[in-house]
Length: 140
Image 1 (cartoon, one colour):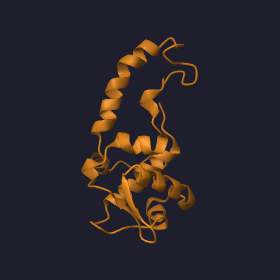
Image 2 (cartoon, helix red, strand yellow; image 1 turned 180 degrees about the vertical axis):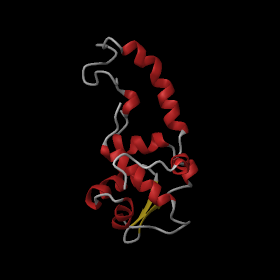
Image 3 (cartoon, helix red, strand yellow; image 1 turned 135 degrees about the vertical axis):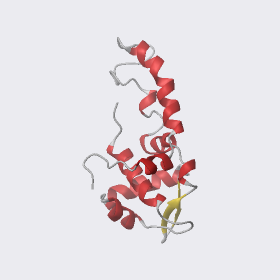
Image 4 (cartoon, one colour; image 1 turned 90 degrees about the vertical axis):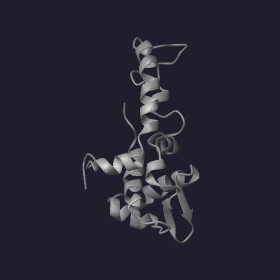
């Protein structure tokens, strides 16, 4: 089960934005610099998060969280970046070859696990992620 680099960058950018007070905004270059991420690539991710309502954006000023970090769920971040068929919607064992009509040998087990993973991702908030302060792999 793997998320794309886009999800990692989104989470790292949101961690940076969670430290910005109230109505202040940061532009994409500032966020990229603070999170040690490539600015052009991050800009696309930030736009996706803004379209999904996770971020507020204002031309010329930048981005801010649309609501407090405790009300930003990980699943909405992942859906904004990965799309609606994010990891818990597709089989983690044989992704391209497994579906309900053509199940893989482990499909029955995935069907049992999927609801719990989906629920867990919905209960983890940006505030939880910030609170744990874990340095991402390949840290900065």
